[in-house]
Image 1 (cartoon, rainbow, N blue to C red):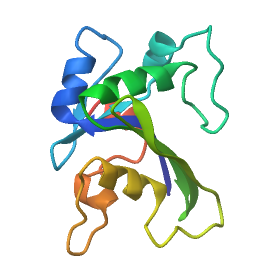
Image 2 (spheres, rainbow, N blue to C red):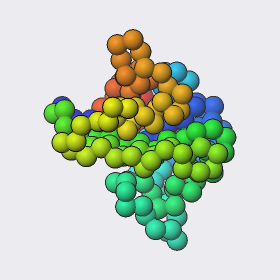
Image 3 (tube, rainbow, N blue to C red):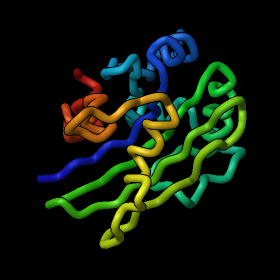
Image 4 (cartoon, rainbow, N blue to C red):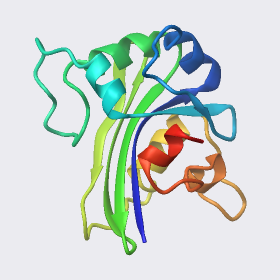
Length: 157
């Protein structure tokens, strides 16, 4: 079974505010007062700045969107998350911006590499946003990121 997520994650209120009037941005509520914006093709096209270089440390981060995320983070921490798994094997790329600056990462987990003692990059990013692990679940499961297994499914959630 596969899992594919490319999204912006932050507090629900923050994402609702910064995306007001942005037709391509769909804010989907998670648990623990977090929400995500799935990176659809429409959103990627709307936020790409052709004058900027695309970052090569992410698969799908639109050119110049890191500057937008840094600006949004002046209202609170904002994470960009990429996670792809198939049959329990996968890779992750994340970064978190806070107060207009990169606060965590970019962090990467490549195929075949064990997560650090601090957890997977996605769990570490969620922790930076204030997410708490459950008694039996990590931050990923506790906020509900396992509810849909594909970025596109979040668009219709």
